[in-house]
Length: 33
Image (cartoon, rainbow, N blue to C red; front, side, top):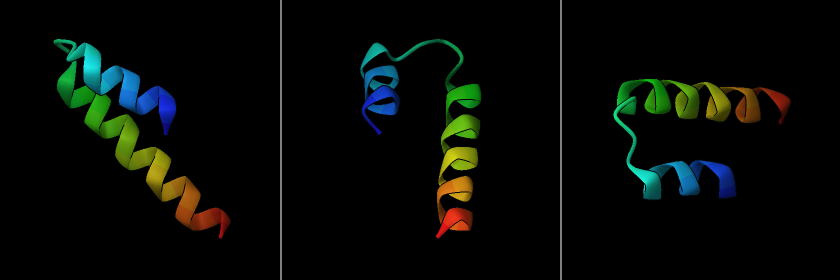
């Protein structure tokens, strides 16, 4: 979560890629539970 927050603070041009990776990470976390 900390890494994702850092990416949000950086506000990079690859916003769509960041959002995709965040969704993918959340999906993996939910799956591991």
